[in-house]
Image (cartoon, rainbow, N blue to C red; front, side):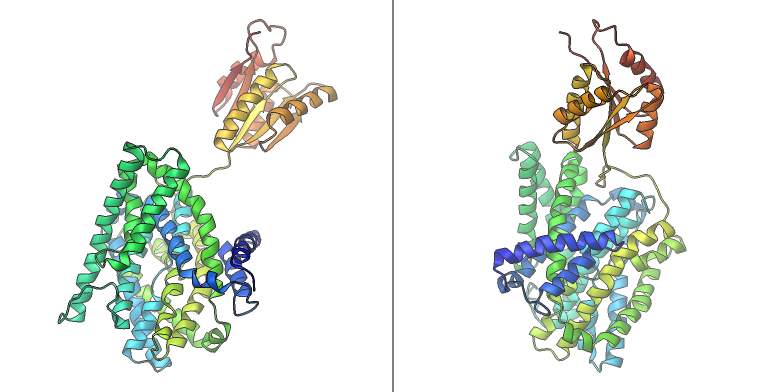
Length: 537
């Protein structure tokens, strides 16, 4: 068994490389992370330190906070308004229908009573923000379903759904943890009051958090850079998540998601900055989330419930969720293909199941071991399947629309093109190109066009590139042909973002290459062109 520090290193390094390996094989990265977690965990090699496993709920809470903030920062108010009540219905009906169907099947196949069946349904029904949020945001960045706000409806519906089902789970567990003291009030009314409080309170607290962040970070300028802005925002969001269980008046996770949503309207530049920062945080958080998720798997218990568990999940999804999806989109402008997309896009389980799957067993409820096994099975089956199915079926079932860059994080590969000759102006061009590349984290293509082979000239260009672009990923391309045509063809081939050209100073008339080329490129190029003039001596 490793030390806590070695355990963290194992999780980060092996989790990352296993995810990348699986991704290169064409499957979602989380599959590799979960598998590594199983191998490292108590069920197989037992290499993870108990203190880290004990802290798994803390890691999970941080990861879910990050992904829900990302979800809120990616929502589109206008698209949600266009959908009317679809998002609200998606937050209620699919989960409740699945919960009811799972309960009935469990009572028939496992001999559960009504309470046990509903508990299992409440464990299985919640959707996973760790799978659905990245998938939906990815679709938004590519434009799939954006015209009708399908991703926005699924994102907001999933958040509401988890709040409602978790309330039902708490009621069925017979606990008053986090609940209001409503003695003598019928359970159904108490549940309704608590649900309204948590949802309404979550929206109000989220609005307040967004206001506070704008006040602190934008108006009062407490943060001096992007890192400080991210730290303050993450700290405020974590405080909301941590305070929510002790103050039964709002949902912490819904507050975090709504804070991101309100930030878009309050201060769009801040929202854009946080969107990029939380995307970086998620790349670390997801490794811990899914590796520790795999480490919690009990293979022996899982094997005993494999057949019945798969049947329960299948019936619950196809019949229960299918009915909920139909009722949620009834009367909407969704096409049959778009409704069918809810099957891959709104079915994945992971984070909530990992958080509550073992609670009935620890509370001594009969059948708790089976509930835990089916919870784990739902994660292993639906999380990888959902992560694969969302990008696979979106192009087949959804329509592509125009991407709104103010609502999603776009991370295109930025390439700059720097055509140079062997004159002194090449140094000026590459200096400016290097400055732009560092700002945008871009790659650089250095293009040298020559009429006849000139090894000495190529060596000069290589020396310039190695001198000025030493810390930037670059390549030197040497080609022949008409200069203007070669530059435009290279720009098209590599889909460059900008062309940086050099122009000799007024005293350098002997070299006319870049002088005549500049005008031609400016007239013919469909891409931005920057002209850099050689400094006068």
